[in-house]
Image 1 (cartoon, one colour):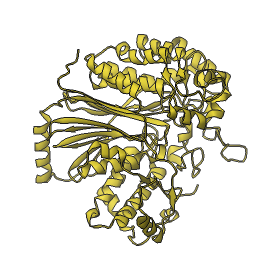
Image 2 (cartoon, helix red, strand yellow):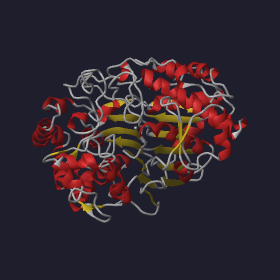
Image 3 (cartoon, one colour):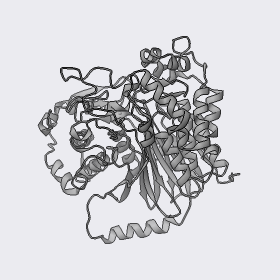
Image 4 (cartoon, helix red, strand yellow):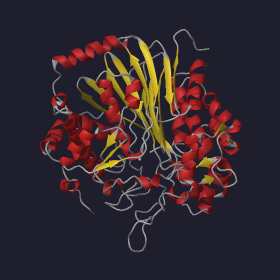
Length: 564
């Protein structure tokens, strides 16, 4: 397990763990699910009521989201599932991230002049990595669940057959990607009405996806990665210019990884490990924030300092992070207190640092989803899933109903070149056969003797800073409704600008930040869709909250309702 740094335990630290162990004997008085879509939340609650645990519910919610949020996740994508098993305290990250096809080449998205070809890594089957979500669902059900996989997938199969109604958010996402959705008949026939964005209330039915889910339910992993479904996937991808092979699907494996673990102001933070950059960047930011007496700063200085911390952590993301199975990363250094002190020493409180001065060698919106779950035994899940850009590659493999991701854009197509989210990368995240691309997904637990927070959010490159802001709200003593609704701001090293939601900064704070040299970029719309659950050990209650920016639902299964 990766740690910040090692030192002999202090008496305060030993006292913390004594309190933790005493508190851990208790179990939550209720179960809860918070997800980005009401139908997915209800799928999870159905499985909990049927006697499933949090891991069974996670399978149900993941699969349901694959049906009702085609713009955010799906069987053709992947993700990270952070698990805590109450019986033995095991904490593990299930890495179901996509992999590059074995025929992928470093310069596959460059033209003859060595320049990135616009759209090539975003639209169509050439943009698709090998999906990991089906393998992850089968793995979680088999190793951690209590119910058969078929039972946990039943709500999603029903949703795919009976359909779901188009809402305003679906219409916005479909309008945004209308061009690519029209391009392929297999996609157009499912997600559009006569080639146009469907009206409100139009029912999206996916019988092909239902049949694929049934194959997964009946045969487990082999129902997707071998047999008829696999052959249909590969034939369709190759017919339309992709490079998948049956060997790609056969070779895909889920990986169990030790989470990144850190401490901040007496709280234990358990979060995503590479190939997610989220946990490393989050803990780096917390380490830097710990070097400063934040309560003594003015509002403008506090925000200035946080911006500078974000800038430096994202610099390290761009320079060092990649697939841990193929790239050596200096994680011990990046997560050390000494590294944080050195970064903070270069922060000037009277002026912004130019990102160019950080000496990087010049040579992730609503397109992801998150859910949080806890059951009455204390098992918990934080999961962030994605197909990358809204509606992924915009390509449905014929005969499968599976909408493919465009996660290949998360690689660095060329060192120093920005992807669709403006993130730059280096050699550590270059395209290579079978490599997992870097991600910003940051499912997180925050643990304290008095309570446990489970949180995460979609949002592309802004995910990590959103989780940071929500986590800080928890540590300041606020409830989950405050974590998910907090106004947000973000800096990611490059482009060298501060993005912020409407209302995030007062006019006075904006003026002070500009005087310090920050380039401010106000956003027209709010961003993110955080889903959170809180087990209040001290008050013996469970709370859940869904981001008011989205259409999600947070539900708590009351203590007096016993599972069937």
